[in-house]
Length: 271
Ligand SMILES: NC(=O)c1ccc[n+]([C@@H]2O[C@H](COP(=O)([O-])OP(=O)(O)OC[C@H]3O[C@@H](n4cnc5c(N)ncnc54)[C@H](OP(=O)(O)O)[C@@H]3O)[C@@H](O)[C@H]2O)c1
Image (cartoon, rainbow, N blue to C red; front, top):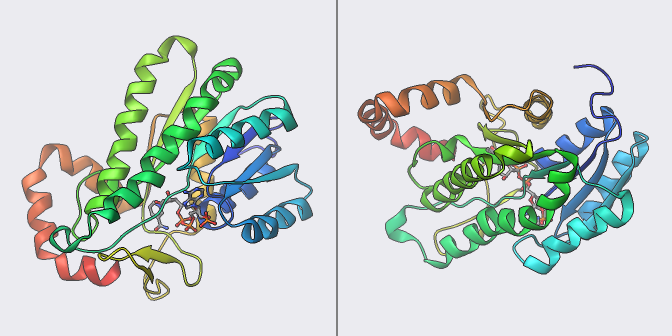
């Protein structure tokens, strides 16, 4: 990728105080973009903002919860106030959960959908007039869990599958406005130390350490997101297992299910 592929572009990355979102903001800045960080934790955002400023990047952070419509709109408004335009919205903010469906407190579904689906809706609707004006990009960060339902992840899988439906609808509705819509199916990736997930009863628990098995780095995911945008691709599926799953699921769903049932203990141990 050439050094300044995103020169003068303005990008919002939701959930960018940590993980994949922060890595994507860093990659965009290295490629010439101005970035707007977002998350609910001001302390984490300030640390990320300082890290990006040290790279010489133009950056602001807008603290806010995208599951609240007014706060998501404020993120877009502050971007326009500061930079005068918006070229890229990366819907990255997301929460995960663990637990078999039969054991779930139904509130788990509500919490997951509030951020992973409504958070995306709340940020994307006010961003659209600006993205249409710039003929820019809207990117949805989904997961391999958005390709087919996986054990212990029903709320997460269904929230990530919803992103595909939203992305497909927008692509057709906006075919004439020449905007780019990208959908990224991310595979298992390194996580921040002590990252939490929502347990079946709705409490927060620390996710198991992933250092013992092979995972993608956040910066490799970030580079794949940038490539999706610069090539204006629709779908990007990451990792070998992800590509295999995306290929096999529509043609041999029964076989995929059999493999998953056989591997259920291994899947649960890793998640
Ligand atoms: N890591 C993986 O293995 C993996 C695999 C597939 C897909 N993904 C997806 O990739 C995205 C990033 O995940 P990650 O692993 O980088 O996790 P992460 O480090 O926890 O990043 C998620 C970010 O979203 C923010 N956030 C959560 N809820 C929010 C809300 N309602 N409003 C605003 N910000 C919110 C969090 O910050 P605050 O808590 O400060 O708000 C956090 O900075 C997620 O959509 C995730 O589902 C991750």
